[in-house]
Length: 186
Image (cartoon, rainbow, N blue to C red):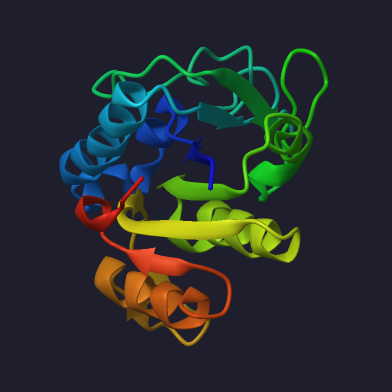
């Protein structure tokens, strides 16, 4: 089974958000790096996906013009290809040739993906569900995803651990095999 690593939205844009300091990004980056190193050592594809949002204008942190749509400086990787998206699912992201991630994976006979990135319950989870529905075998590296505390309408604050636990609950056995980065086998 040919496997590709998806590195979703691991970009400097998030460092400009107020919630950035409320989580341990260094541990997350270490887990993503561990997977990147494994994939590079085996010459397996690494697809880097960036989120773009021009709705806040050219100074918005997710605008291509602001200068923050680039990899976190603490992560070292040489992607096989780079894709950009403006929706939650990385499967809709396009590269410079206009090819979607889904098209690229099929063209390169990839049938399994390992999902990493920012945010656990948003783009990473959406990408996982979408990829599973498209027929891919999906491994969700839960500790190689990053999220931040969230407050519900009722005022309850959900911790990072609670969000991860919920994501594992809804994905595991339905859309993906959920595991820690160290347990991922290629």
